[in-house]
Amino acid sequence: MLFLDVDGVLNRTGFHPGESVGLRSWIEPELARRLCQVLRLTEAELVLASDWRRDRELQHLQEELRAAGIDCLLLDTTPVLGQARWREIEAWRADHEVAVEDMAIVDDGYDMGPLAARFVRVSPLNGLDEEAARAIVALFGQPPQ
Ligand SMILES: [Mg+2]
View 1 (cartoon, rainbow, N blue to C red):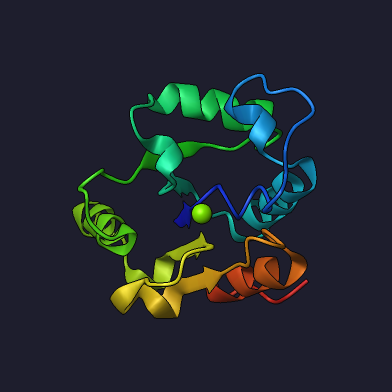
View 2: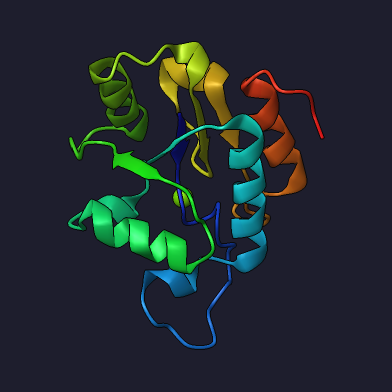
């Protein structure tokens, strides 16, 4: 299970699409490709933890990710509890009885509380770069590529 943030992960600070045709425009193709590689290598499923999930249907989010080249199953979104993001991730994890060892979080935030060991922080200046991609793959116990 990979808990995904979008802003600062799939787009970088200062990124602005030439033309905005919905959420899909705000995902940078290079970063989308890198996420797809990670998902292929780890066979992790995606749960969206980003603010993008607020007031949006899962199917719409799935379509926007697909349109941005992220052709994988978006399993779910974390609940909106009005709490720290890690608490919302933890609530989803506990509800679905996913072992901590079987999850990772990628985000440009800082505080992941007790989930820190499963957290790959990216800089919003770089987004999901090679180093972060390798770190996620390593968390899932796959050899680095
Ligand atoms: Mg972010």
